[in-house]
Length: 159
Image (cartoon, rainbow, N blue to C red; front, side, top):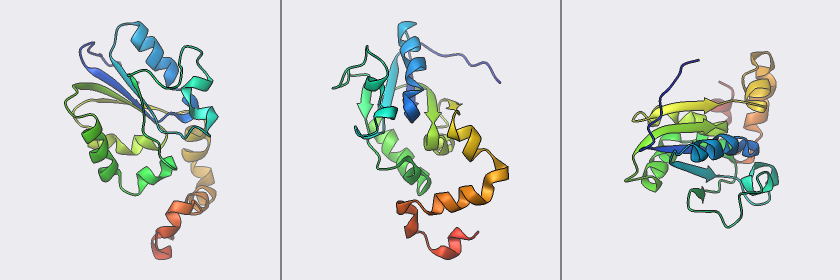
């Protein structure tokens, strides 16, 4: 683990709201005087991943520092990380970003955010499913059963 320094004059961007887990860090950083932007990617029906269902101080509609960018499934980020990183750079343009805190499939965008520090938050299925090489065959089968990934030709899926 590496210590990082954060600049209070640069934005800390949270992407990937898996179980609203990253919000506890965002709230503490805001309390400590850091500028924070938290992106909610889950639809309102996914109550587990939306911060208003876990934190009494967060109300919907959200304050300015929380924005919604709803994705049907986070896994679509894997189809074209370059494209999604480009969209995010457009959304975040003119902001001085000091750090990206990435969670879930948003971690796949990290190579495209070279101008800032990257922190990857891994927990839950990130560790016991995605990082479990003993379960690789089941993982591969599960990924390619996702509706959006059925568009990928089968000869690519077998690699």
